[in-house]
Image (cartoon, rainbow, N blue to C red):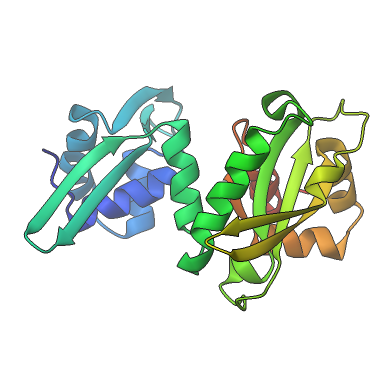
Length: 230
């Protein structure tokens, strides 16, 4: 089993930001190359990172390394203690994103909302929906019990009919209700509004917790926004 040392964890966090060479990692972390190599080799040997092709350096070529997606899971319960690495799949990725919502009392409602819209007969979810994110007070962890759940819904650019059922959807669990207020944009309109300087779109991007984004549309937009390229 892979032992996740402090240095190894720092390397994982750097690789999660993008592919890097050992030299780039060492410089970013302020440590020596001899400290980086054994930890990086452990990650590759156990299948949590991969060595890519060479890139040209000033004096010699370097190898880049890329991180594979995984989960490091720990639990400490009465009579139980365990730690393990788990492979990730699409369903687990969505659950992890839901669990990242700061206020736990909203987790079950968001999960049920997702189930309701993915099984809706009003539209074809996989065909029509590009991305879903939670924004506003729920994403910031500042929601009251009666707060609406602001939801960003990105549709494929070729959708030419309204999705009224997503504008306001009530989700009920054990007689408690949450209202999901949908803000619906096509992928093209969302990016165009951002490029035109929409303050509302900018605020959404700052706060949002991405729930569903199989093609990394929202992730890509957020990355571009952070870099100032959009």
